[in-house]
Length: 350
Image (cartoon, rainbow, N blue to C red; front, top):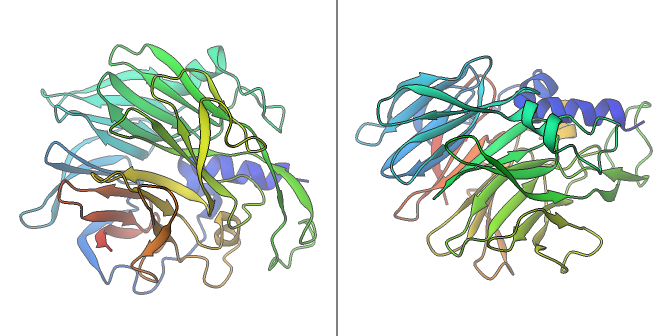
């Protein structure tokens, strides 16, 4: 019963939030607070080395000129659309294509695109998911990135894991998140779906990753079918840990521990200079509600999680719609990209 809807989600994370939610209309007034306009389904967003970089749904990777808030194409990923970008400490740009055969690229100082890794092929061969619920352990949908000193971290939504990739394409598994049992939410008038309250095993669907200044790595969940609101978690992996397993039934044990719970459909994470975390929620009602076009389901959120991880606060309530990414500038300003379908842009929140 869970398979068709969970499959829709995995496709979504691969680059088809477009395929799963293609019929979701853009929200009226979604761009009223945009700092940058004219983008096509903006998704991944990152700020670093004085650069703001964004990935569009058509695969175009652009840099935002903050002097006039215009977007300038720096390249395009091959074989699909861009789901994520990350700016390295030296200004180089990493980019990722969505899809079951997601590929990792790097633009270096010579402005030439270089393929670093076929992520899907590597996961299938070396790192299948032992906790997969659909007998598709080799499935891969890389979705999120964060540049680190010795390469880049890749969040793989279908594989429920994060890996580290060097510039030469050497891969190290960092962490994997086990499944969690959730309840079918209310509000769905669909005879094909289980009744509200039905317990359902649900995969994490890791869409996002970011490294803190202390070397700890944070992972964010979208949450698989039935996308129950309030069941997305944020995990912390100890600095230097490899092969960690994050366990919802034992969230305080081991090298991976839970630092936040109660979020919904996380698609991006960022960390500020003061150590606060920022999570972009695709839809406050959950991705399934958005896929089914329920009223109000295009409203997303940017959530600030305090440095001590004890408080959460929504930034710019009511102004964020189907966000693709969140990023924090050197001065502490917080930006988000979206909506992830059709005309969009980048706006400041908070």
